[in-house]
Length: 233
Image (tube, rainbow, N blue to C red; front, side):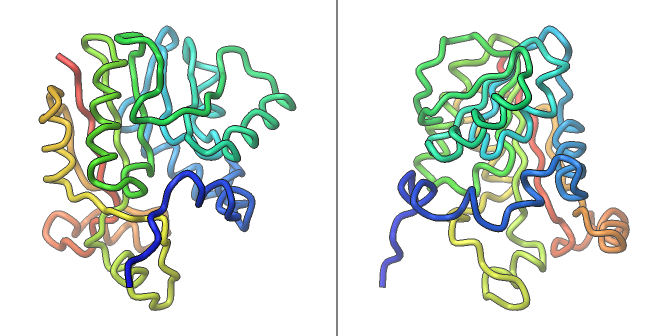
């Protein structure tokens, strides 16, 4: 039986954004602190930079970066996502932060107008052809010398393998297409990017992360996340 294609309607009609997501909405939760820290280790933008966060979800990187970059725009194709972000923005106004409901494959934003595009926990939610279109759009909107920062789960990690089989952890049906390190690097270079950095990162779980940090180079099932930084020549 063919599974229903996961798209905009799924995120708008399900409880994806409004369900049990406290750890994703709370910037002070251990998971979000870890996530923000690790993504900014890939590339930490300066105070004059203009940033685009594609697949912004709950607005995590807009809240984290808004006070210290020139401007950041969060884009998501889910109206539910954007509504939640705008409600929060109305409660805690931050200059230079805005949100846009748009398709990351064709944002309608100006060409060569951003210094950084962040795609954190995004590409695993995208089907192959959509991923390629999103990367191409990132290339279009970035200035020369601008950077694309990607952060995604590694399918080969033992926790992801357990989740895929609904063992101990529940499978995330919205993760429709995991990308390998090799595939991510190929995707970005195919549209003209040059890869600056590409590496595996450990998880946020205390104890496990120490073991991953030491052994992930030799043990693929301990590679928790993939990080790629690409530059537009």
